Length: 112
Image (cartoon, rainbow, N blue to C red):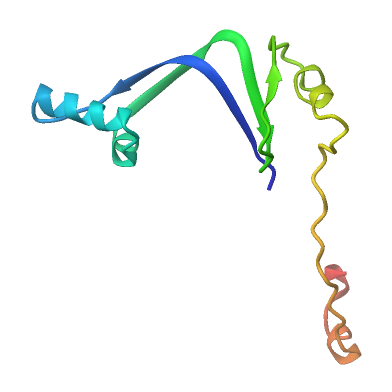
């Protein structure tokens, strides 16, 4: 499975619920310190990027590539910045199973 990670500066809106405003404030404080439970229980809205500067990385690559001005073109924004790296999924390497003739003779042709 392929993956891409995008990083950009944006405006977010987080709605939290609680039995008091102080409890909600403390939940937000926990969120700022990275508490994962708060991230899962809050209603988070993410808005489009605030600036044209954004970054991406492919799969488990440790380097972030910059997209200085988002153009809306995969070739211009992504492919040209991958420095020759293949952007096509690689086929899985699966060993072929050799079945005995007695088995293959009983499997209908539709499966071949």
